[in-house]
Length: 242
Image (cartoon, rainbow, N blue to C red; front, side, top):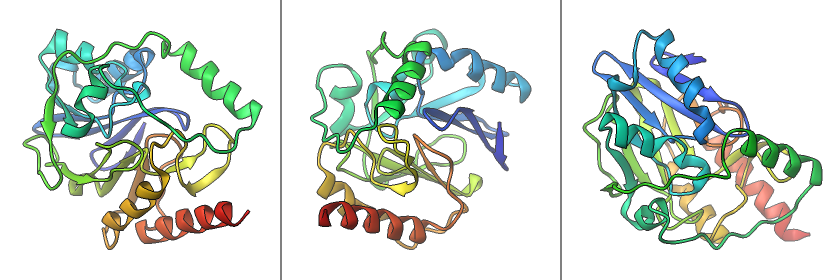
């Protein structure tokens, strides 16, 4: 699905994959779940592209619902996979998360787990090789994605700013659809290792100018980055006051 110039989406509000398509090739931001492969290749074909046109996969962090088909691209098509050094072990399956879950609603959880299972999320293929990145790097990939360190959800969580797509990809540094409660709108993401650090990291997004703020879970937000951050902090403050 086309979201804007150079920006395409695979998946849905539960789990999504994003493509940056330029004349130089395709950059993939997060690789979703293994079962997204068919939708991914169909989206590429609609653009007149194939997996051989993918120049790199950038992971916003190393959790399993973002690894999806990344190793398949790396192994079968020679595509490098980029992840922050602090999450490299997690992406290789050598380290696990220590998440804080927060509130839960059974219906929302059932939808998320059911979708994850249907898309092969119970059989994660971890990366065997990764290319480590650091805060502030501009990667030599289509769209020139810039890495913004966003620790909290995981030690190596990042956002990715891609000016050519007028977008900031936030991974699980925030969400617009809480997969455990079903709540919509900008808010803190669940499964976060350090919620306090994740909130502090939102300062890294201050004053960024982009039409799209794109989470890994939930609808893309086009109401302004600063407004999204304000709402996330308000939700967190309200939860803390209860």
